[in-house]
Length: 374
Ligand SMILES: Nc1ncnc2c1ncn2[C@@H]1O[C@H](COP(=O)(O)OP(=O)(O)O)[C@@H](O)[C@H]1O
Ligand SMILES: [Mg+2]
Image (cartoon, rainbow, N blue to C red):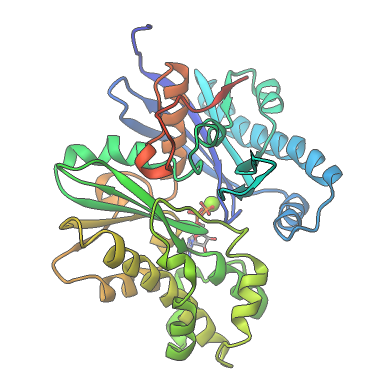
C-alpha cells in the first residue's frame, strides 16, 4: 500500500444538462478533502453539442456514437489544455465523460443482465492531448457489482459533510436532481429525486429560444397551474422506493412533449410550473423517504439549480420552517464545480485503490474501486 499524498487532479464533468464541460483543477488531500484551485465552464462547439442532443433523442446511428466518443474526448482534452496552459500539468486527470445513456433497470435476456451505462469521451484521446494519466469510466464497476452506477457523488458528500456533525441533505440540482442524506449517526444514503433543470431548459428552448431561464426571470412572470402541477406530480418515479436513479431515458423529450399536452396556454406559466415541479418533487421526496426516518437540520443545494432564485424560493416555501436552506457556497464549495470536485476525488481514490461507491446509494452488493486507468 502506498503512503497517500496530496495530488493535483483535473476533474472533468459534463452532466445531463449538457450545458458545458466543467473542468476544474483541484488539490485532493490524504484525508480526502478537496480544494478547487481554478475552474472553467468550457463550452462544447455548437455542432458537437447538437450531435449530443441528437444522441439523447435516439436519432443517432452506431457510426455517430462511435465518432462522438472520440470527438467528445477531443473536446474534453481541449478543456483540460485551457487549464494546463495556465497552471501546468496535474498529477492525474479524472474524467466522468458525457453520459449518453443510462439504463439502471433489472431487465434480462436469456438470464443475461441488460443493466448498463454509457459515458462518451475517449480517455486515450484525453491522455494523448494532455500527456497525463487519465482515470475514467467510474460507473461501470458499480453496475458490474449489481448497483445502479449512480448516484456516485454521495461518497464525496459523506467525506465532506459528515465532519459537520449535523443531519444534512446535500441536494444537487443539475439536469436531474439527486440528494445525499448525511447524518451524525446513521449510514449515508442517497437517490435521484427526479427532474432538475431538464424540463425548464427544454421549455425555455421551445417557447423562448433560450437555453435556460436565467435567474428565474421567466418563471417569476408566470403563475402556477395547479392542475398541471398535480398531474405531473403523479408520475410513478416519485413514488418508487430508493435506491433509485433516473435520467434522460425516462424524463425524455417524449415525456416532456406528452406532459406539454396538458400545459397551460401562457408560456411564462409553463416555465413557472416546471420550476415549481422541480422544487416540489425534491421536498416531496424528503417527506416520503427521509423525514420519517431522520430529523434534518439543513438542506445544502448545489449544481446549476442553486443559481435559479425561483427554484430556491419555492424550496424555501415547501420546506419546514425549522430546516435551514443553504447552498454549497456557504461551505466554501462552488455550486458550479462541486461535481467536478467529486470526480477529482473519485479519480484520486482509484489512483490509490480506495473503494468509492456507497452501496446504500447505488444498491451495489459491495464496495468496489471505481474507474479505469489510461
Ligand atoms: N443563473 C442561472 N439561472 C437559472 N438557471 C441556471 C443558472 N445557472 C445555471 N442554471 C441551470 O443549471 C443548469 C446546469 O446545471 P448543471 O449543474 O451544470 O447540470 P448538469 O450537471 O446536468 O450539467 C443549466 O442548464 C440551467 O438550467
Ligand atoms: Mg453542467
